[in-house]
Length: 216
Image 1 (cartoon, rainbow, N blue to C red):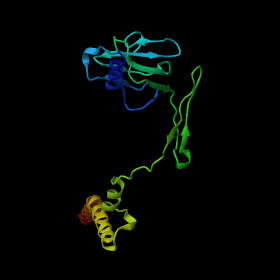
Image 2: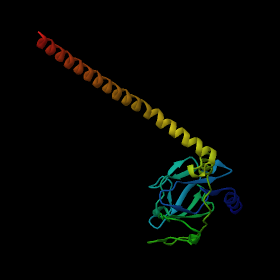
Image 3: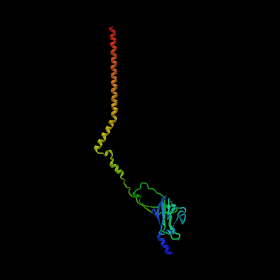
Image 4: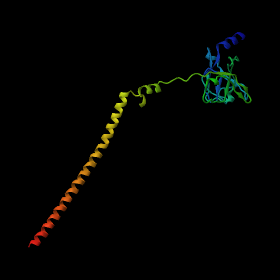
Protein backbone atom coordinates (compact mmCIF):
# COMPACT_ATOMS: atom_id res chain seq x y z
CA UNK A 1 0.00 0.00 0.00
CA UNK A 2 2.85 2.37 0.72
CA UNK A 3 4.33 1.84 -2.76
CA UNK A 4 0.91 2.37 -4.39
CA UNK A 5 0.43 5.60 -2.42
CA UNK A 6 3.75 6.97 -3.61
CA UNK A 7 2.98 6.10 -7.22
CA UNK A 8 -0.39 7.85 -7.20
CA UNK A 9 1.04 10.85 -5.34
CA UNK A 10 3.66 11.56 -7.95
CA UNK A 11 1.59 10.79 -11.07
CA UNK A 12 -1.31 13.12 -10.15
CA UNK A 13 -1.00 16.81 -9.50
CA UNK A 14 -3.24 19.83 -9.19
CA UNK A 15 -2.71 22.58 -11.79
CA UNK A 16 -4.14 26.10 -11.72
CA UNK A 17 -5.01 28.22 -14.77
CA UNK A 18 -3.99 31.00 -15.09
CA UNK A 19 -0.77 29.81 -13.51
CA UNK A 20 -0.77 31.90 -10.34
CA UNK A 21 -1.45 31.63 -6.63
CA UNK A 22 -2.93 35.12 -6.29
CA UNK A 23 -6.04 36.41 -8.02
CA UNK A 24 -8.17 39.54 -7.96
CA UNK A 25 -11.81 39.53 -7.01
CA UNK A 26 -13.94 38.54 -10.00
CA UNK A 27 -11.15 36.62 -11.79
CA UNK A 28 -11.79 33.30 -13.54
CA UNK A 29 -9.86 30.35 -12.05
CA UNK A 30 -9.72 26.80 -13.39
CA UNK A 31 -8.29 23.94 -11.32
CA UNK A 32 -7.50 20.56 -12.88
CA UNK A 33 -6.47 17.18 -11.52
CA UNK A 34 -3.95 15.92 -14.06
CA UNK A 35 -3.65 12.15 -13.84
CA UNK A 36 -2.20 9.20 -15.70
CA UNK A 37 -4.88 6.77 -14.51
CA UNK A 38 -8.38 8.22 -15.03
CA UNK A 39 -9.88 5.28 -13.11
CA UNK A 40 -8.55 6.69 -9.84
CA UNK A 41 -11.62 8.95 -9.53
CA UNK A 42 -10.07 12.17 -8.28
CA UNK A 43 -12.15 14.76 -6.45
CA UNK A 44 -11.11 18.37 -6.01
CA UNK A 45 -11.42 19.60 -2.42
CA UNK A 46 -10.50 22.68 -0.46
CA UNK A 47 -10.13 24.11 3.03
CA UNK A 48 -11.15 27.70 3.67
CA UNK A 49 -11.65 29.78 6.78
CA UNK A 50 -15.38 28.97 6.67
CA UNK A 51 -15.57 25.30 5.66
CA UNK A 52 -13.26 22.28 5.58
CA UNK A 53 -12.80 19.50 3.00
CA UNK A 54 -15.63 20.64 0.75
CA UNK A 55 -15.57 19.31 -2.81
CA UNK A 56 -16.12 21.19 -6.07
CA UNK A 57 -19.82 21.83 -6.65
CA UNK A 58 -20.67 21.80 -2.94
CA UNK A 59 -21.45 25.50 -2.63
CA UNK A 60 -18.48 26.58 -4.76
CA UNK A 61 -17.13 26.03 -8.26
CA UNK A 62 -18.55 24.23 -11.29
CA UNK A 63 -17.36 20.71 -12.06
CA UNK A 64 -16.25 20.09 -15.65
CA UNK A 65 -14.80 16.58 -15.92
CA UNK A 66 -11.50 16.50 -14.10
CA UNK A 67 -11.55 20.30 -13.78
CA UNK A 68 -13.32 22.72 -11.47
CA UNK A 69 -14.05 26.27 -12.64
CA UNK A 70 -14.53 29.28 -10.37
CA UNK A 71 -16.15 31.87 -12.62
CA UNK A 72 -16.05 34.83 -10.22
CA UNK A 73 -13.49 34.46 -7.48
CA UNK A 74 -14.11 36.13 -4.10
CA UNK A 75 -11.89 36.53 -1.04
CA UNK A 76 -13.92 33.75 0.58
CA UNK A 77 -12.43 31.40 -2.06
CA UNK A 78 -8.97 31.89 -0.54
CA UNK A 79 -7.68 28.62 0.89
CA UNK A 80 -5.86 25.33 0.28
CA UNK A 81 -6.88 23.17 -2.72
CA UNK A 82 -5.95 19.58 -3.54
CA UNK A 83 -7.06 16.50 -5.49
CA UNK A 84 -8.17 13.44 -3.54
CA UNK A 85 -8.89 9.91 -4.82
CA UNK A 86 -11.31 7.29 -3.57
CA UNK A 87 -8.36 5.25 -2.34
CA UNK A 88 -7.30 8.08 -0.05
CA UNK A 89 -4.06 9.51 -1.49
CA UNK A 90 -3.95 13.21 -2.30
CA UNK A 91 -2.09 15.33 -4.84
CA UNK A 92 0.04 18.36 -4.19
CA UNK A 93 -1.65 21.19 -2.30
CA UNK A 94 -2.03 24.67 -3.75
CA UNK A 95 -2.65 27.76 -1.61
CA UNK A 96 -4.79 30.31 -3.49
CA UNK A 97 -5.37 33.88 -2.36
CA UNK A 98 -8.14 36.09 -3.76
CA UNK A 99 -7.61 39.79 -3.07
CA UNK A 100 -9.54 42.97 -3.65
CA UNK A 101 -9.02 45.40 -6.49
CA UNK A 102 -6.72 48.40 -6.51
CA UNK A 103 -6.38 51.01 -9.27
CA UNK A 104 -3.28 53.18 -9.57
CA UNK A 105 -3.85 56.38 -11.54
CA UNK A 106 -1.01 57.96 -13.56
CA UNK A 107 1.40 55.06 -13.14
CA UNK A 108 5.10 55.94 -13.01
CA UNK A 109 8.37 54.20 -12.24
CA UNK A 110 8.01 55.20 -8.60
CA UNK A 111 5.05 52.79 -8.32
CA UNK A 112 7.30 49.77 -8.78
CA UNK A 113 7.73 47.58 -5.73
CA UNK A 114 6.22 44.87 -3.56
CA UNK A 115 2.47 44.86 -3.01
CA UNK A 116 0.37 42.72 -0.66
CA UNK A 117 -3.17 42.67 0.67
CA UNK A 118 -4.24 42.69 4.30
CA UNK A 119 -7.47 40.67 4.29
CA UNK A 120 -9.65 40.90 7.37
CA UNK A 121 -9.94 37.49 8.99
CA UNK A 122 -7.32 35.97 6.68
CA UNK A 123 -4.18 37.94 7.41
CA UNK A 124 -1.74 39.21 4.80
CA UNK A 125 -1.40 37.78 1.32
CA UNK A 126 1.99 36.91 -0.18
CA UNK A 127 3.84 39.86 -1.66
CA UNK A 128 3.98 40.42 -5.41
CA UNK A 129 6.48 42.58 -7.28
CA UNK A 130 4.88 45.09 -9.66
CA UNK A 131 7.01 46.22 -12.60
CA UNK A 132 6.19 49.36 -14.59
CA UNK A 133 7.15 49.26 -18.25
CA UNK A 134 7.11 52.04 -20.82
CA UNK A 135 3.98 52.60 -22.84
CA UNK A 136 4.49 51.45 -26.45
CA UNK A 137 4.48 54.28 -28.95
CA UNK A 138 2.01 54.23 -31.81
CA UNK A 139 2.78 55.16 -35.40
CA UNK A 140 -0.56 56.85 -36.02
CA UNK A 141 0.40 60.29 -34.72
CA UNK A 142 3.82 60.11 -36.39
CA UNK A 143 2.31 59.21 -39.75
CA UNK A 144 -0.28 61.94 -39.48
CA UNK A 145 2.22 64.64 -38.61
CA UNK A 146 4.48 63.52 -41.46
CA UNK A 147 1.83 63.34 -44.17
CA UNK A 148 -0.15 66.39 -43.06
CA UNK A 149 2.22 69.10 -41.80
CA UNK A 150 0.70 72.26 -40.28
CA UNK A 151 0.25 75.28 -42.51
CA UNK A 152 3.15 77.10 -40.84
CA UNK A 153 5.48 74.24 -41.78
CA UNK A 154 4.53 74.13 -45.46
CA UNK A 155 7.22 75.01 -48.02
CA UNK A 156 7.04 78.55 -49.54
CA UNK A 157 5.77 77.28 -52.88
CA UNK A 158 2.95 75.37 -51.22
CA UNK A 159 2.03 78.42 -49.15
CA UNK A 160 1.85 80.64 -52.25
CA UNK A 161 -0.28 78.11 -54.10
CA UNK A 162 -2.59 77.87 -51.12
CA UNK A 163 -3.05 81.67 -51.04
CA UNK A 164 -3.71 81.80 -54.79
CA UNK A 165 -6.39 79.12 -54.50
CA UNK A 166 -8.05 81.02 -51.66
CA UNK A 167 -8.06 84.28 -53.68
CA UNK A 168 -9.55 82.54 -56.73
CA UNK A 169 -12.25 80.97 -54.58
CA UNK A 170 -13.17 84.38 -53.15
CA UNK A 171 -13.27 85.90 -56.62
CA UNK A 172 -15.50 83.13 -57.93
CA UNK A 173 -17.92 83.76 -55.11
CA UNK A 174 -17.71 87.60 -55.24
CA UNK A 175 -17.76 88.22 -59.01
CA UNK A 176 -21.42 87.25 -59.69
CA UNK A 177 -22.63 89.64 -56.98
CA UNK A 178 -20.36 92.42 -58.27
CA UNK A 179 -21.47 91.97 -61.88
CA UNK A 180 -25.16 91.86 -60.95
CA UNK A 181 -24.73 95.06 -58.92
CA UNK A 182 -23.10 96.83 -61.90
CA UNK A 183 -25.93 95.72 -64.16
CA UNK A 184 -28.54 97.04 -61.75
CA UNK A 185 -26.75 100.40 -61.42
CA UNK A 186 -26.37 100.67 -65.21
CA UNK A 187 -30.02 99.80 -65.76
CA UNK A 188 -31.09 102.38 -63.17
CA UNK A 189 -28.97 105.08 -64.81
CA UNK A 190 -30.34 104.19 -68.26
CA UNK A 191 -33.93 104.43 -67.04
CA UNK A 192 -33.23 107.71 -65.27
CA UNK A 193 -31.71 109.16 -68.44
CA UNK A 194 -34.63 107.95 -70.55
CA UNK A 195 -37.13 109.47 -68.11
CA UNK A 196 -35.27 112.78 -68.14
CA UNK A 197 -35.23 112.85 -71.92
CA UNK A 198 -38.93 112.03 -72.00
CA UNK A 199 -39.71 114.85 -69.58
CA UNK A 200 -37.62 117.28 -71.67
CA UNK A 201 -39.44 116.21 -74.82
CA UNK A 202 -42.82 116.71 -73.16
CA UNK A 203 -41.79 120.17 -71.91
CA UNK A 204 -40.60 121.09 -75.42
CA UNK A 205 -43.93 120.01 -76.90
CA UNK A 206 -45.79 122.10 -74.34
CA UNK A 207 -43.69 125.13 -75.14
CA UNK A 208 -44.22 124.63 -78.87
CA UNK A 209 -47.96 124.34 -78.37
CA UNK A 210 -48.12 127.54 -76.33
CA UNK A 211 -46.07 129.41 -78.98
CA UNK A 212 -48.42 128.28 -81.70
CA UNK A 213 -51.43 129.49 -79.76
CA UNK A 214 -49.93 132.99 -79.38
CA UNK A 215 -49.20 133.20 -83.05
CA UNK A 216 -52.83 132.54 -83.90
